Length: 261
Ligand SMILES: [Zn+2]
Image 1: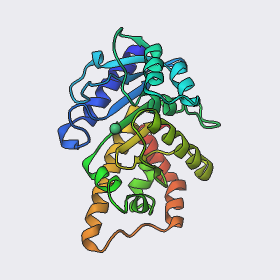
Image 2: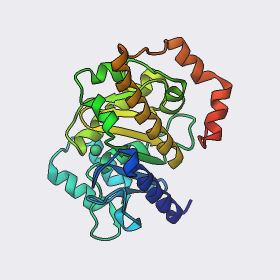
Image 3: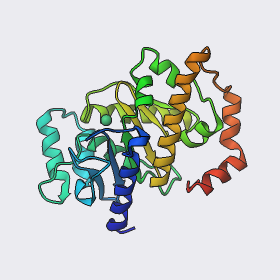
Image 4: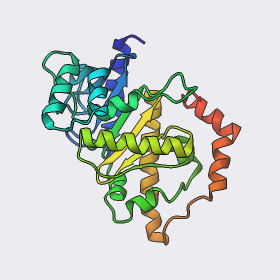
């Protein structure tokens, strides 16, 4: 894809995630990104609103200076500002989102044998998700298991839990650590990340994946909240989760939904 259709799809994705009835973001909350090619990606500009921003609300950024900072020992606000300034390509004078480092990391991820990799990332602060991530039992319940076949199919067999970290570089490094552990343990890339006291991150091969998995993740959090009125959740046993992951009709359903599995 050349840059223009990618940017217009990114704007559409952001506006969808920003719909008031989705209850995922308010005002300038949340951010989205899309990989253009090996060298660069688009990310929401700092302060732009997902619900209303057009193409002018996105900055094209080079991967190299951002990934270099992420891999270094540097951590000062000045180092972050210098890297983001060096990375921003166009439009001139626009500052990319503070979460640009997290987006750069996820968009640069490739699993062995996965040619397509991650092309879109959606990060939001849904109320139902944050009821969970901000709760005393957030980590325990988020990692407790899956409750429905849809949750397994669209959000993966397990959630990738990211402990709270300072937004920006700290979050990007915490996400990297959590993803590396997840990939090692699950031999798969996470489809859904929950950041403690912060929100939801969905990495996707396509924008549709990000939209669908965001909806399913939010619905699962609402369901979990509802189960608390009926004695707490009944998580599916691990063998049922494995079964859904390998069923041919589930794979077909995912392909029909636009997933390139
Ligand atoms: Zn956030």
